[in-house]
Amino acid sequence: MDNVPETTIASPLRQAISVAGNRCVILAAPDIRERAGSELASSVGKPRLAALLVEEGVSATRAEEVRRLITSSGFRTFDVALPSGWEALSLSAALDVADELAGRGLTPDDGIVAIGGMEALSLASWVAGNWGSKAACVGLPTTLEALILASCTPHSLSAGATKGIIHCPPAFSALLADPVLIAEGGDERTLENACALMVQSAFVESPKAFDLVVTSSETLSPGDTMGLISQAIETARARGRLASSTLAGARRSLDIGLPLARALAACLGEAHSFGVYLAEGLRFEARLAWQLSGLDPDVVFALDALLARFGLGEVSCSLTPDELSRALKEETAKLTNRRMFVLPRAVGRALPEPVDDEILAQNLAAFCQARRPKPEPVLGAPKDVENPENA
Image 1 (cartoon, rainbow, N blue to C red):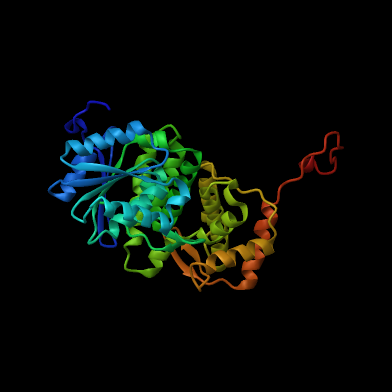
Image 2: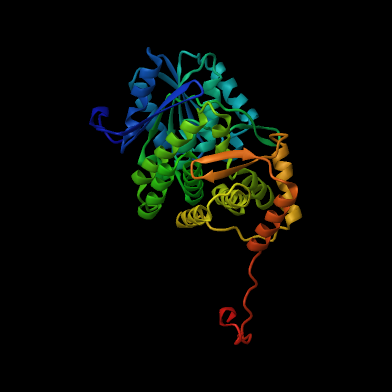
């Protein structure tokens, strides 16, 4: 562990996000993980017992570093291992963790520190939010995706084969975004997921937020971890604003792109990241909005260009319209009896609306045709001299 006293971490990025009866403060700076113990102590009051929830895959060195920081703030600690990936987002996994915390004597007056990605921090948020009157919880995200979602819109848990059916309340009192942890824990897929969330959230939040993401896409690089963290914090702020809105339509606007994304994920599995599927969902609903709600086509093209600059390309697949329509209906029916799409009228103005079956079928057919794999060129085949574009 770097022997850097907490007082040397000067002027971190700071953003407070209040939503659903919870206030989470995001702090971001190099070595901000050094504040894990003091942030937990300030939330608890009198340190006594703390559970350290560590996602599978986090290095033992990092876990030991955080354990020492918590202990130095006066807590007795014990470790609990969390599953990695989607296995963490199940009610059975959450109940296993809850059983272990109860067995160790953790009370709502004690504290929780969680290290991991989006799935692990969502599980930790569910446990902390349901632990008595709510236990103080500090998170150390290891991916940009986790930084964006954990403060205000953690992923819901699965029951059996139904993903996302059990609401997960936001419960973190603090998130410490350390570029070292995020650089170590992130990969190409989690970066794609984060970039898709940046575009999705800004598109429905405000023109100013969308312009900021456009500017970021032109200047940021995958190696600029602090720059990406700064944009991720701005995205979390936008999501928190929408998630805490008194208008149901504003809250529902965060679902834009998700119906088709879930259908593609059901059909294609892990062939691509969910961020790539979400990007396709955004393109699809933007075109529905152009047809049905009068969305300016220049906005549709601007959205396409922004997604492309973030490397969120189109999915090449051989799905038929019937297959995709069936998956869309089945995935939607697992979570709601109403099939709605978020149709923006302009950047920052979107409402969920039903779509006529015939229009939906036409758009699905056009989508499948456009995504059909291009035939491989035949070596030695004669060129089309009448149409140079086909040559």
